[in-house]
Image (cartoon, rainbow, N blue to C red; front, top):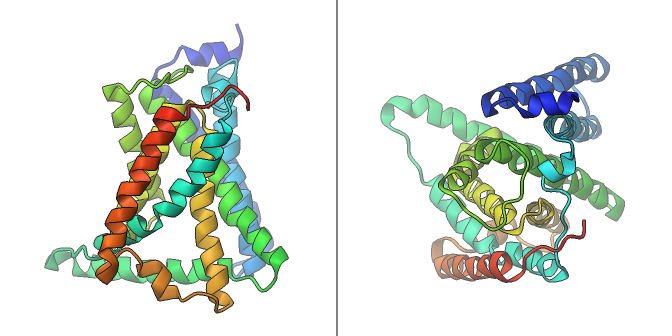
Length: 300
């Protein structure tokens, strides 16, 4: 019997341990070697290189190896053997653009969260961490030329969309939901709903941004439902890519002085709360249309 067949008979907990072990196996040696080569104060270019490498060793390679161990058809286990219709390929990016004011509204609501007085030090630490993350993201996204912008899109949009969806929706959600390979066939069981929301929680927590936790968790849940209802991992990949591309594009336009930072990040909240609600309604309508009227076609 093949090794994949032996591991396919194990339970979900064993598979989770196997997956975590693979992540550590590939990640720890890579980071150790990188620290020796780059030193304690790497440049921005070096940090971008590290992020690209991390995407492979943390998300892509462990997911592929784990799927190979668990199934004779790894791409099928990850739901990467099925493509999407051209209508879906057009509607998903449109849906993500429509959702932007709603995301801003939810982010503004999340930022209003106040911790109890006895957690004041933790709250201040979380705020400092949030500010540092924002500064690091802006530094990463800074681009003076079109080639630099394209490189940023590859590192900050293409690779995360592929890697994180393979990791969280393809592997993590699949383990919590079914534990074995198999199509969703537009069926949403109670276990499927639980798997989607648990994975969305882990997905948001992984980014270590408390004041963006709620919108990111809801985004993760939406990506999970897109996978379940279309049966293709490429659909949430496309949505994830569009979301990150919007952010990278906005940073670039801000750097060039074309748009104002505050107007983009706050549209949908405050005085423009109506735009956030309208965005939420229209985005949900598009989401319903995508999952109900535009099923994926078997073309990878």
